[in-house]
Image 1 (cartoon, rainbow, N blue to C red):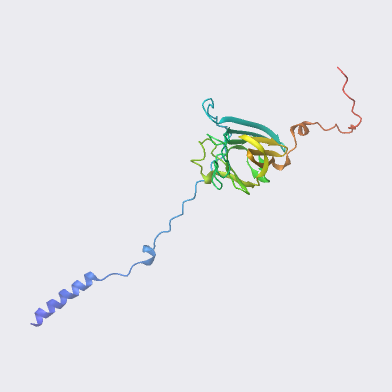
Image 2: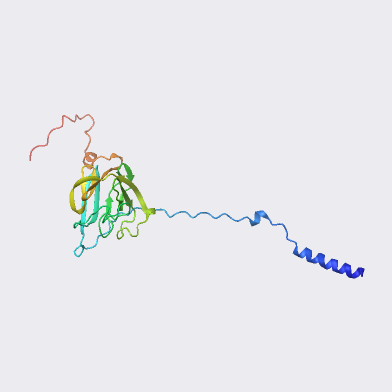
Length: 230
């Protein structure tokens, strides 16, 4: 009987030793922290102005403004929808939503040099010109994806600059237009004008002033002879 009890005890001890859980190595089992993937960087601004489609069969004709303000050259291309008796802002164009700023393809704006818009810096390049109309304030968006239809694929991550402007009451304009002003441009439609101040970055001097030669050393500027008449 003693021998049988000893055998049973030995078997039970063997089972317990097999089921015994060794203490875990905390350092080995700690989860490895994964690096948070970075958001993709915005694309560099293109210098190629995308062509607009042929407007022969379109209700909204193409428009273009080439203008210089504050020493900066601006090239804006856009579609020109017409009122045709419709309520434009707050009706056809919804307040608080991204607008292509015209019709058909997204409007584009191109700068040949670095500029400031509403006092904020913007690098040279070609941008889609989106807006967010509002009764008291407009958002103006310069987006680095100029080649797109409307605002259906608008990507906020590609915004290069956002500024705001106050709309002002103006003379009635039947077809949407973008016009040059003394200090920039203005978005015009219906009885609304939205001005934007544009200037060359750093207050760059006009080309004529940069190209002017300084008088030679020891030569009086006032004493220079007038050119002979031809």
